[in-house]
Each structure stands twice: as C-alpha cells, then as structure tokens.
Length: 121
Length: 110
Image 1 (cartoon, rainbow over the protein chains, first blue to last red):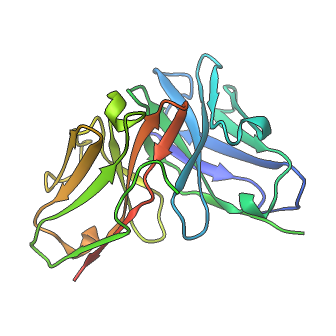
Image 2 (image 1 turned 120 degrees about the vertical axis):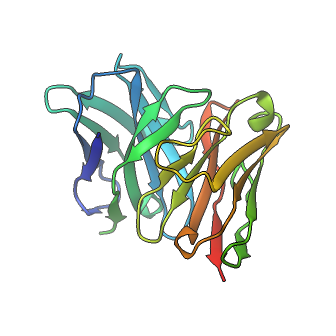
C-alpha cells in the first residue's frame, strides 16, 4: 500500500524558507485522481491544513498561508514538496504530508509520520 | 479558535459508549459538506477513521460510527477499549475556501 515519508531540516532560521519533501512509495504519485497535501500541527495543538496539489498541477492553499506557500510535485522522483517562506516562530510545528481523496470535501489517507520543524536562530 | 467546535475531552469506562460532537455552521457542515474523522494515537500521525460522514475505511472496527445532521456531526464509539484512548478530529470544508479541522477531543478510557 502507499506510504508517505516526510524529510527536511529540523531547524530553520527566522525569515528563511522552510523546505520539506514527501516521498511516496508503493505507488505512483501520478496514478489516480488524488491530491497531495500538507497539514501541520503546532506543538500540543490541533491540525491546520496548509494546501494540496492535484496531479494536474492545480493547487489549493489555505488563504491564511497562501502568500507564503508553494506546493509542487516531482513526478520523476515520486515526491511532493512544500516551501514556506518568511518563517517565524509561529511556524514551528510537526508537518505532515498526506494523500487526498476526491470528495466533498477532500479527505486525507494515508498520512506520513510527520516531521518536526523548529524555527529558531 | 477552530471553525469546527469539539469538546476538549470525553471519557468512558471500558465497554461503554461515548460520542464526540463536531459543531459547525451554515458555511461548512450546514452547507452540505461532508464530515470526516481522524484518530491520533499518542505520538503518531492522524489516521482516517470515518469518511463521508458515515463510511469506515477497510480495517476500522465497526465499533466506530459517524453521523451528520444539520450543522453538526458526531462520532460514536461503542464497546470502548483501552486502545481507543487518543485524540479525535473532525474535518470538513468551509465556504471561505478552506479545509477545516475541529480543535480535537481527547478521549480518556477510565
């Protein structure tokens, strides 16, 4: 079955760009009518949707983060990527990637194990 | 402040039934958007529990069930087991063009 694994720096300096990669295994990132999503969880808090990208390349971002977020897909490496620029301490969180299923609305399954990113100088 | 409101905590004894509510508004759940539920065991990633209000993915026990009415949805767990102790999140969509999650409910098995 499809599995997802996030990777990237665990510490990012304020004002810099957070860059994470989600590697998809057990299936092609281009197969099926799925989207590839990013969701984060601040320490001890609930879940916050960041955005997703469809195989077509179209994206949908959380309006509150839209100005700072870019999600892309690299089909040759079977990966999805998240870039969040101009980070502050408020961006410290566990970042999850997840496969999105078409629905009204989209739901997420499976999820990666998550990676903690700390914004600190 | 989450767009979808869940009780911070619920508890029950083994074997009992508990319900977790998810209250929204006319711009999300009441706007005919479905509700999905996730279970997050301590220290792990969320796992899909219910999709499309009432549907269980393969492998999810039928002790878990979902329902939706008006601007609210509920997750019911019957025959409570110690392994059910986790955080539970509802998820839907808001007309402000945002995927929204509830604030989460911590289930304690007494």
